[in-house]
Image (cartoon, rainbow, N blue to C red; front, side, top):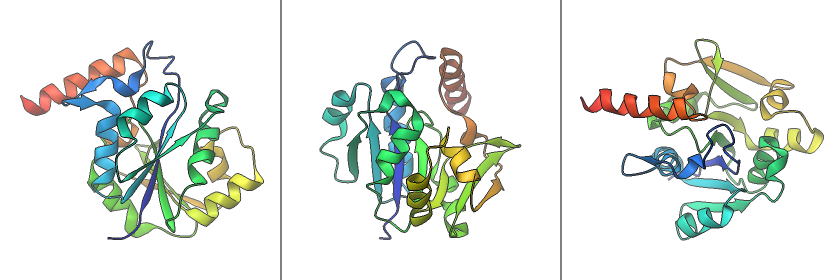
Length: 194
């Protein structure tokens, strides 16, 4: 099996949700369980970046053979610091970057992106809205992270070799940030099963 790493960030405070969103119930598990399971249907290893409530995530996922846990002690500095922490552990030639609050990223999305990999970054979007997972050459990512302290990972990737990919998958922009998002997630599931 080809080595394909996927950085999944799960370090944030979930301030817009009002409660810790990673462990919200979803499909017999949690939102983060679903995000990891989906990625592992294509990727060989998850680099799970923890921060807030990191010990709870270590207890839940620490024994999983395909998950490498990385604790970002600087998680309150934001997402950039979590991606930098995760990128240090990447060993595959290319890697995906996504977040733990995107539980609907099905394997076809990863499969569609993978053959298009190049020496830069591929930034998926849906109807012009930026989405995930991002696919990036690991050497390119490491070099950019060493050279810059950009305001965001996206700005960092846009500063150098990249291309956009319009994808007909609304799931790539469906992150669960607010209670309204979580309600929509439940409605989406109900319409699928109904």
